[in-house]
Image 1 (cartoon, helix red, strand yellow):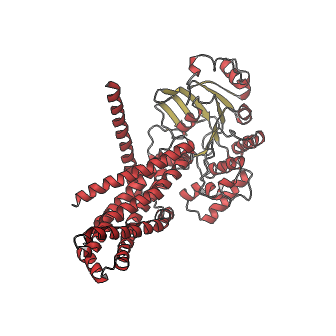
Image 2 (tube, one colour):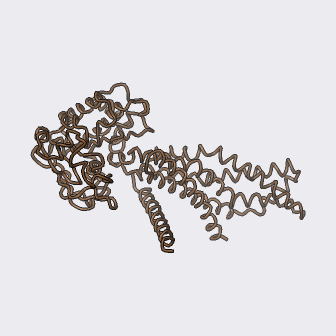
Image 3 (cartoon, each protein chain N blue to C red):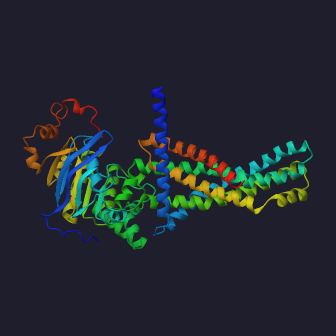
Length: 269
Length: 256
């Protein structure tokens, strides 16, 4: 369905952010952020609550407009895209939201098949069949006719993931995929994210502050601090990082440069 | 003095900012309304939601308004022997004023609030963001069907209100107060022009726009969880009711 998959080689860049700035009033969230994600790579962005991780991925998919800098998605610069161009580009994306964001007025299969219904001429029967297939892919059977309100948190997350992959996107964005789930369910989601990358060959950016999840799903990890990426590396490189900020974060230490000084107070978004 | 002026300045700025954003949303809605594809399924669903389900409410409102109008004007008119004109007063007030305004206020309470609450909940649970990521414009998908449904349905509801209002007035006058039915109906027909009805329907059409745009605007701009949804809902009803009353005066003055 999507011709961009595998069009680029594994060493080519799929997403690139160059010197990106984003402020909300006096609150400067992104301050000259640089990040490059290769085709087929699983990038995990870690950072404390309120450091602008969500803002980062919302800028990539155009839910927020960045103030300065350039963002390239599949070779296309996105700052000045028209509504129509966005609609074409967004079909390459799938996004898993922090609060799953399922449409609660629709049944599970209608949620999963939403984009198919909007953007293809398939009949409801065909869409339902495809939705059931996608649900199987995330490990759910016999839930297609239920309403989202009848599902548990972990199931809702998986339905949301099935919806995100319904159009076979080239890029998947995960906004805190394991937040609010018990450790076992969190690992189910982590394994699914790994499986998505292997089965669908997608490029992905996940943001999280859950280090267990980060080590499990990442090809590379990037640490976001004060609006900039301060370190990027493979999970083992991050573990062995000499950067004290990275060390404090991954070990969850209360004392350290992140929590020290006036900058921490009121530094929220 | 300076803080006082500051406060006024800030209030004016906020008012202009908000008005500008409502007008912008209205403009975008108009553009998306005429841009294909047209979502008939959603439109029909909204017509049912806004229109069909509002029928009982406006019927009761219209009937009792017509009845009380007949009762009150009879008491007044009797003092100078003009009871025969009760029918005229009921018909003119219902079609020109009370039909559109009361059904507008009832629909704003029933439907405007529901729009703000539903879209507000969707906003705070990221469902509107999810629509964007599924390459679907939320204005096209959520606002346009509600907007069109309100435009189409409000004049129809107003006709219902007018009819049952006049009927209610007739019943009270003829059955309760003993007026002559022939005279009553004659006085109703003779002095009621088609123009009176048109003005009422035009008002209803404008009120439909106000209800949908304000309800959807408040929904889309909801912030801060359940409390935010509550605030948006209240604001939608208060603001659209006030705008209906204000717009009503200006439309009446325009056709005076």
